[in-house]
Image (cartoon, rainbow, N blue to C red; front, top):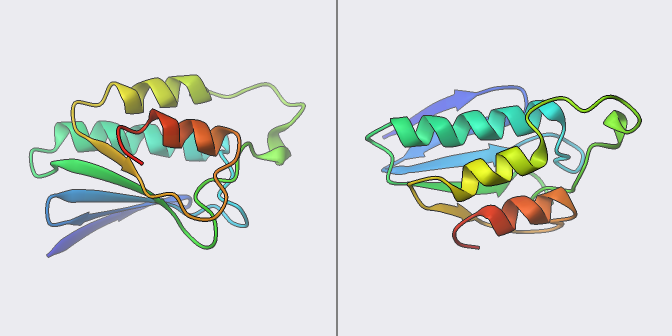
Length: 118
C-alpha cells in the first residue's frame, strides 16, 4: 500500500517503509527555491513519521537534479539556501539514499553528496 503527497515540484510516496521523494521540475529538475523548500519539508516529514525507515531521492524524467535554476540568477536568494538543505539531509536520523541517473550537476551533485548513500 502506498500513500502519496504531491506539490508542483516534489512528489512523495510511501512505498512500504521507504519514502520516495521525486523531484519533478522540468526540464532538468533545477533547484529552484520551491524545490529546495519542498525537499527540506520532505526530509522533515520523514523524520517525524514513524512509518518511514528511510528516504529515497530520485529525479523525474531524464535527470536527477540539474543544478541551479537559471531563472533565479540575478535575483535575491530565497530560503532555504542549498547549504541549509544539504545540512538537513546530512543531519537526518533516517538514511537518505540518492538514486542518481542522468545529470547531477552543481547543486544536484551537492544534494547527492549530502545523502548518506548514492
